[in-house]
Length: 479
Image (cartoon, rainbow, N blue to C red; front, side):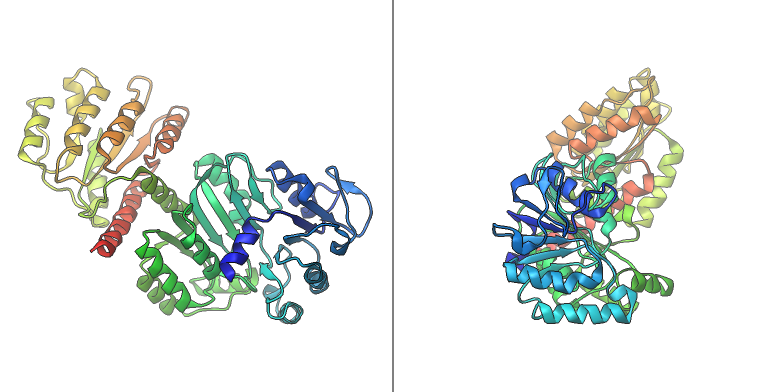
């Protein structure tokens, strides 16, 4: 019944905040503020504090049994040693789910393990109440650009609803990093689950929930351990069948990293070779750091929403205004096993009309357009448009990689690129450089119109390769 349990935890109608505080710097205050400011009904929030009084206009209840109404879930932010007693009270109240944000369990050693066993007994091995955490920042559900369910102890803002579901053993991804990704890079989320030590509900439970939820199109995971590798593998294979990409960042792959995970979430060391074999069998995509995890996730999110054609053959065209950039791009394209195919005769013939006599275009799909810009007396946008149209209509080209130099003397017309993308529906990825104040608005506009854009050439190529890998797996399931 874990799908129903998780649905309740993500969609509670009423919440008890156990450990509520009147002190703004304490987590019990900030959790309440986060719920209220993001639209959770005030009359369905019940702050629990043994002292009388009120906070943020809400009256304190001294314990959950004093709440006169039914309560769906509890958010618990109290010292670890009193949590078994608190859970017993929640069970007696009929509360069906709890998010334990307090730390001090497996990660602290023997006393933490004893505490975990005590909780198992109280909950009848979690049959009486389901638990997220402990040692986590809980759950986020984004409903609109201004509302949802936010249980973290850091105020969330600047978010917009999207198609991304996140599973993380790090609370950071449901805290400050969530804000950063939303406001700096424009990622749009549907759910975030910070699962911490995963004493009860695990990555597999949330993964299964995301797979059956039609609003989730791409899944990002940060994991330090696998609860049940066989079940994880089966769920990943199902994700492949239903065409939902999963991007994974695995923590604790080095000896020093394993030591860090033990002190972070109490994760036990796992054989790295066995884990790598598991990842290969699951056909999910691996990332090497948080930036790459969410770059890939964002790219897949945009690609899925754009409904572009699949770059199955890995054939790309690269347009540049710099010979040096073209050389480095060619090396990277070869390194990541993309292809620069020959253009058709008709495409090359039309391109030759744009270029000057002293510099003909390549027969293969690396095109430095600067000589054509000089011939056009600086009309860079006119050249960009004509060359892109020719490349995008060439049957040998699966997608376009574009370098964009944007300055006041040569402003890039982003509307033109958006129009071409909407017309031809082939994937277009852009690498943009120029003064930061000039390029950031263009980057935001392109991403808003489902065109992935990057400030680093290699990032652009790696992300296109990620889409190619996803396209290859989709093509296999369609056969």
